Amino acid sequence: MAPPANRRSGFSRRAQYSTFFQYTAGVMGAVVGLGLLVVSIVNPDAFATLRSAAADLTESPAQAAAGTRHTARSFVEEIGGFFQSGRENARLRRELVEAKVRLVQAQATEAENKRLKQLLDLQEDEGQTIAYSRLVSSTGSSPRRFAILGAGSDRGVAKGMPVRSQMGLVGRVLEVGLSSARVLLITDTESVVPVRRSQDGVPAFAQGNGDGTIRIRLVNLGINPLRKGDVMVTSGSGGLYRPGTPLAIVTELLRDGAIARVLSNPSNTDYVVVERAWAPAPPPPPAAIEAGES
Amino acid sequence: MTLLSGNDTVVRQRINRKPSRIIASGLPWFIVMLGSLVPNWLLIASAPVLPPLGFLIFLAWRQVRPGLLPMWAGLPLGLFEDLFSGSPYGTAVLLWSLAAIVLNDVENRLPWRNFLTEWLVAIGLIVGYIVLCLGISNLAGASVPVRATMPQIVISVMCYPLVGRFVALMDRVRLTPFVDMR
Image 1 (cartoon, one colour):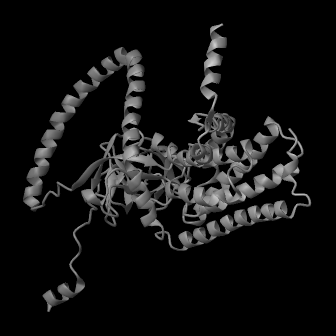
Image 2 (cartoon, chains in turn green, purple; image 1 turned 180 degrees about the horizontal axis):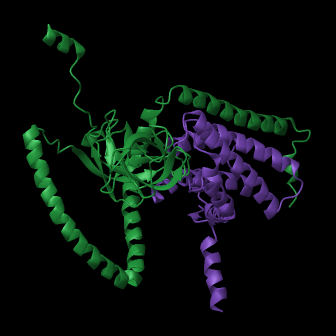
C-alpha cells in the first residue's frame, strides 16, 4: 500500500504546523529522556523511591502470577516425572542407602563439633532469618539481573540483607519498599561475592557474567587449582554474606579462574529466605588496645 | 445456513452501536503498559531472554496504525517502562522517543509498504534498541558482553510478527461497536 496522501502537509499551513509540532514533541521526549538518564547515571539512587512505589503497587498481581508460575512448573514436572518414575525410583533407593550411612557419619561429626565448640566457648549464631517470601518478578528483558521480592520494610527487610533459597545464595537486597524489595541477583555483572572452595578454602571472587553463569576469579594468581565440579561457597570475608552458603559449581576452567553454574536457580525456587546481614565480630578498636596496654 | 444466521446475529448486535470512546483511545496505551509489566512476572530470569515486549507492542502500534499513538507517546510510556525494566531511569524515554521519530521518517520515505519491509524496519529498530539498552546499562556500571543479548535479539525478532498480529487483533477489539447509540 502506498502511503496515504494526507501524510504530505502540502500547502496547508495548519497541516505543516501540526507536523512540525509532532516532531518537536517527539524530540522533546528524547531530550527529557536524556536528562533523566544523565541524572540516574550520576546518582543511581535518584529514582529508587519511585521504583519502590511502583513495585509496591504491582506487588499483589505479581504475587498471584508467581503462584500460577509455581503451579504451571509443577504440572510440567509431574508429566515428566510420570515417564521417568521407574528409573528415578531405583536411583533414589540407592541414594537413600548411601545417605543413611552419611547421615550417621554426619551426626557423629556434629556431636564432635559441638563438643569442640564448647571447649572453645564459641556461640552459635542461629535465628538470623528475617522473612520468607517469593521472588515475584524479575527484569527478564534487561541486561541487568534484578528481581522483586514480595516482602518489604513491613516485614523487616532492610537494604544489604542477603537472600538465599534452600539450595544456595540468590542475591542481596538493593532497595526496600513498603511491601516489596529489589534484589540484585548474583548473576548480575555488578554483583561480586567473596567465595572459597568448599573443600579446602581456595579464595576467589564470584562475579555475574551477564548470561546466567558466574565468573570465578581467583585471588591468588599462579597455577589454577580449580577442577570441574568444585563447589564454591561464600567465605564471609568483608561481611554481608554468611560464610558457608553454597553459591556455584565449576563447569569450565579458564586460565585465571573458571566459569561456574549457579546452584540455586531463582526460577526453580518457590520461596526464598531473607537473612540478617552477616557481620564478623569486629576487631577491638586500636584505642582500646593501647589503653589496655598502658 | 447456521453460519449465515450466525453472521446475521453478529450484524444485528452491531446495528445502532458504536465503539466506546474510552476504549478506542485508551486501549493502545493500556496494552503497551501491560506489555512492559507482564513479561516480568512470567519467570525469574537469570539471563536476558525475554523480548522487550512493551517496546515491540509500541512499535507494532505505530506500524499498524501510524499516528494513533502521538509522537510524544514515548515519554509517558517510557516513564512507565523504566519503572520496571531495570535499566537506568530514562533509557526507555529516550530510546522510545527516538524510535518513534526514526520510524516516522522511514515510513515517510518508503513509497511502498509490505510485510517484509515493515519487518525489516522493525528488526533494525529492535536490534538497535536492545544493543543501546545494553550500552546504557554498561555505561551505568554493568559490564555485560554483547553476546549475552543474542538469544534475546533472536527471540524478539522472531516474535515481532506475532506481536503485530496481536496488535491488529487489539485494533479490531478497540473499534468493536458495543455502546448503544441514543
